[in-house]
Amino acid sequence: MIQDLGELTGPVLIFGGPYSNAEATLAIQEEARRLSIPSDRVICTGDVVAYCANPEETTTIIREWGIPVVMGNCEESIAQQAPDCGCGFTEGSSCSLLSISWYAFANQHISNTNRRWMQTLPSAIDFSMNGLSFRTVHGSTTQINEFVFKSTASHIKEEQLTATGKDVVIGGHCGLPFGDSLAHGYWLNAGVIGMPANDGTTQCWYLVLTPDHTGVHAQWHRLAYPYRKTQTAMRDCLLTEGYCDALSSGLWPSMDVLPDYEKSQQGTPLQIEPLFIERH
Ligand SMILES: [Fe+2]
Image (cartoon, rainbow, N blue to C red; front, side):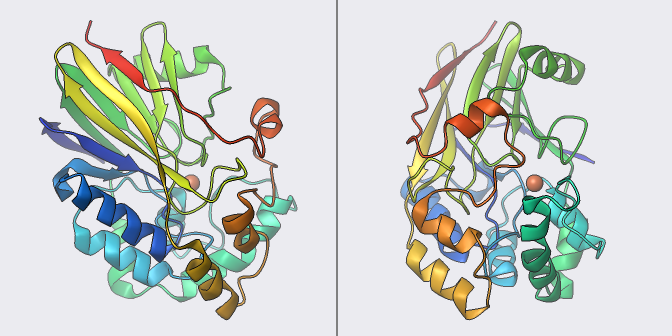
């Protein structure tokens, strides 16, 4: 199911991956308030639940906020009570082993109300802004758990973008924010708020799109939040494996899913240049 928000006339705030991190979720909600962006112009690219200690509280904050949310593979799995998170990790890989404990924890701590809400989430969210058309997805336009990175070949992004008939695709899932200007459009990733971007800092990322005369400005921002509180909550729930340390080190415990370029960037503070999306 694709949800169509129609024409959005003011700035839009987009973020991914709350990952059961209630403190980061409250921080992004406060950021939207500070920027005076109402809930119908805030979009989440999915994976509301994952690594951290508050799957139920985080889902309730997002659901009661009333923002449009794309279904992530974590929501798809929890909604179906599936045996694993559906991330597409290779069996026996460190990502796969790390996911076993947080997935079981999240699956046990989600209420029926929130599980039912997850079942209702769309696979994509469309909107238009200033004469440009956007499709927001979780992984790729064809697969909920496909990883699309900055270094993913342009022709793969081009083919998927062309098939949608849109000007811009906005993805999530891979955990790393980026903006890629293609020959016939753009592929953006808003980044995630629940885990740092493997860049050696504790801050997470979100994206703001702002309409301007001839197009749309895309600007990525860092999000700071009280990560030590999140770590305490994780230790209290015995979720002490790699992701707990990653909140303070800014370094992912496993890079199994990363292409060589993204692996080489571990520990280098991210800088993302703003992008101007031109109307054609
Ligand atoms: Fe995902």
